[in-house]
Amino acid sequence: MIKTRTLAPVHPNQGTQAIFRRRLDKLIKEMHDSVMYWVQASYKANEPEIAQDELPAAALQKVLKKLGRRWEKKFKELGPKLAEYYAKSADMRSRKQLEQMLYDHGMSVKFKMTRPMQDVMKASIEEQVKLISNIPQQYFTQVQGAVMRSVQTGRDLNQLSKDLQSRLKIEKKRAALIARDQNNKMTANFVRVRQQELGIKQAIWVHSLGGKVPRPSHKKNDGKPYDVEKGWYDPDEGEYIQPGMLINCRCVSRSIIPGFE
Image (cartoon, rainbow, N blue to C red; front, side, top):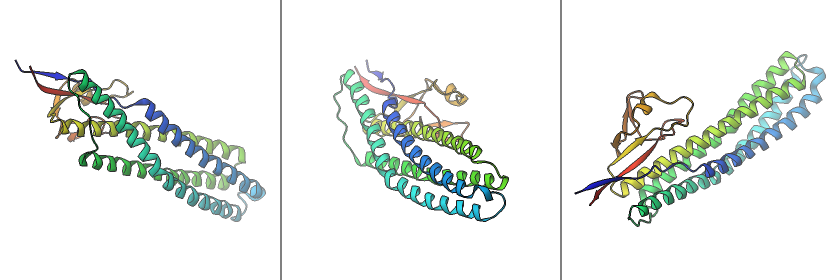
């Protein structure tokens, strides 16, 4: 009698995600500390004239533009290295998990870096580089707005410092989202390619219980099979998707292995 077997899901590795997030947090904190130092120095130098003259605003804008160029350059330089580390680590972890699961079911498989995997790896790295490079651009846009509002309303340096600290918290939350979301996407993509290389046609959708606000359609689809190549048609999105593809989606899949006696 021909039977099928279902593998356990391959989950994104939390250790890899934590390392990536710490490195991104460290880079953001260094940028923020630099901004705090130079903005405070410029603000103090012009504080007696704040809200009375255009010169203080012009001086602060000059400082911010210079800092913005410096940190955009640094993020662009470090982004590719950080993204490559994260993508390769996620691939290694997911590959080892899947190899061990297959071995436990009597299948000795050693995955190689095939052309499809290279394409997915390249796309994953490029997406992360773009996200990382956008961090200083968005950060300085918000910081400049906070500084200019402070000058226009004549606020003291203490209030400005509080506003900028709030911006740091927002950027760290954004970094956490990038780390988590990219980990989910990369793991799902790598697993999908490996499934296809093994000739696996179907998998079972596994809804994650980790999110605070679960997607109703994903929850309803839990435990149901779907086509690995095409994906699952999400009625709420109006398109076919893969586990972990949508932002904050933590769903995974269980590979269906056919052909066992």
